[in-house]
Length: 274
Ligand code: ATR
Image (cartoon, rainbow, N blue to C red; front, side, top):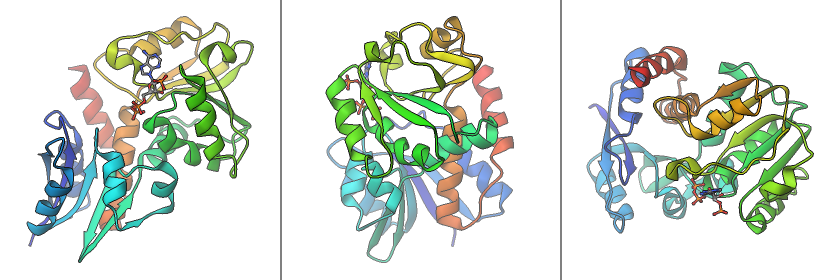
């Protein structure tokens, strides 16, 4: 019988995950179907249970359900525990296993696809919400020289930094407090571009040869990457690669094989440019 997977979200109609996983399945000759499933805002758990009852083997979870998926899981991976959020569920018997592949996807996109090793680098992470929290431990795992978390609300950045103090010292502050510092990689994990708002980044924060990375993506240049270009960031990348890599990592969790992400990312990129 064909195994069933889905992405759960609200909204979810525009998710690219079904197309990504269909390509992975074809490439790896895996017999599965993957659909987009809209969960009511007050009915996430019911939707998951219904999907399991219908034979579902696993699910990706997107906005706004990642924290709820964390709470629904009966067993968590160490990285999901750290992230406080779940983007990948696997169902076996009565168990709901929760994992989080977002951070691994980001790191793989930066290090493998963009050939930008994090070891010894000065990292600036913008934002202190769920998206930022999910990537801190994976970033620290690759031994950067430093990590600064900057957020509009400084208290939230400081609280987040404290949660990871057992792994490494993490600096925290508001955007003004970045001034005078220089970074090799600046990652945007805020949702500011959703509202079209520009981030108040001080001038001179991009080191020579630095990479600006936006976890968001869209048609054309994102507002953060436009700002980074104006401020002299040598390299710029949006979050499309992270999207494909977190999916590849989820596919690995479910099926035990890692698909080749490159042709899938190239096809998505072409679609987005069309
Ligand atoms: P997510 O799960 O996408 O991280 P979130 O938990 O709501 O969503 O967090 C949104 C992040 O974007 C926060 O860091 C938020 O800053 P505050 O903590 O100060 O609210 C940041 N953010 C959203 N809109 C912003 C804006 N216009 N300027 C700067 N930061 C913004």
